[in-house]
Length: 417
Image 1 (cartoon, rainbow, N blue to C red):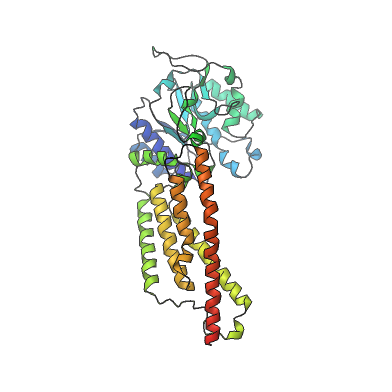
Image 2: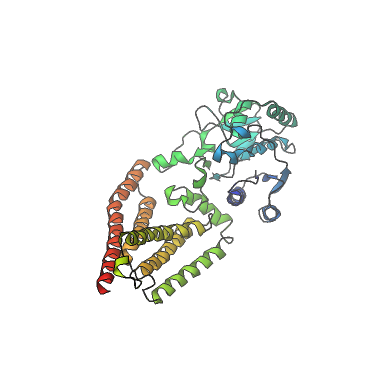
C-alpha cells in the first residue's frame, strides 16, 4: 500500500520497491499488487509497473473519522485505513497484506493456505497489522465502511486499532499450521511470531531465536526516523544493514549516486582551497585597538567558534540522501565534517586536533557500535555508554583548549599593538 502526504513519501516508495523485488527473488508464487492512492507520482507508478513487475490498483483515500484523535506525529497514520481496500481484491482467493517495512528471509507462500483472517500477535493482547492474511469480500469491505461511518471504537485512530476492533476474538483462535496436502483452511487463526519478528527482539540477544514457527519475516515497528532504509539507522540499530543488503541485491543505489558524487567533489574543493588559503581570514586581532578587545568581544568570538563547530558537524548530516547505503552515508558524513572542520580550524586559527576531536570521537563510537562480537544487546549498550563516558573528558578538554587558544591569540595581538 502507498499513499502520499507524509514527510517520508520517497523513503516509503524505495521501501516498497525493495520489498517487492525481494519477494520476486525468493520465488513468491503470487501476484505482487500495490494498492496506491491516485496522487502517487506517475513516474513512481511507471517504475513499479515496468521495472518491478507490480500490478497497481488505484484507490481513493478513505476518510479517516478518527483523524481528530491523532496527535502530532501520529497524523502520518491518517490514511492507513486505505489498507481496508485489500478486501476489494476479489480476483484473488487469498491476499497477504504486508507493510513496506518488512524483510522477507524466505518464501512464505504457505500463508495463502490460511483462513478468512490471520495475523500475528507481537503485542500479547493486540495483533499487528504489518502482515495479515485475508479472504477478499465486498460484503466484508462494505461492513467495514459502515463501521467507519458510525465511528466504531478505535484505540489508535489508524488501521491497527480499527482491525483489532473488527476481529476482537482472534487471540482465542488456534495457531495456524499449514496443511501438508496444500488445502486452504477456513476460519480465523493466529500466525506464529516467526511471520512478524519484531526487530527489537533481535537487539536483546543480537541473534534470532524464535522457536515458534519459521523465522520468515522481520518487521520494524520502531521510531519512524530509525526505519532500516535510513543510512544513520546503522550501526545504531544493527539490522539496518540487512535491509540495505536486500536493496543492494535487488534495486541498487543509482538514484542517490549523483548527489553523493557532487558532495565528494564539493568537500574535496573545500579542503583544497582551505589548505591553500593563507591562515588569516579572521585573525582575531583584525587591527583592532587593545581597548576594544574586551570580555564581550572574546565572548562573541568564542560563541562563534561553538556555532561554527556545531554547523560543521550538522550540515553534512542533512544534505546526504536519506536512503543511501549506511557505509556510503557515514563515509560522506565523516568526509564532510572533516572538510568543514579544516575550514573552521583555518578560519579561527585553531589547532586542527582540537577542532577534530569530535570527529575522532564519532569514528570511535561507530566502531564501538558496529563491533560484531558482542554476546548480547546489554553488553553492547554498556560498551556504548562506557565509550561515551570515557570520551566526554577529551571533548571538554578540546573545547577548553580552543577557547584558551583564542584568548592567548587575542592577548598576543593586544601586546603586539
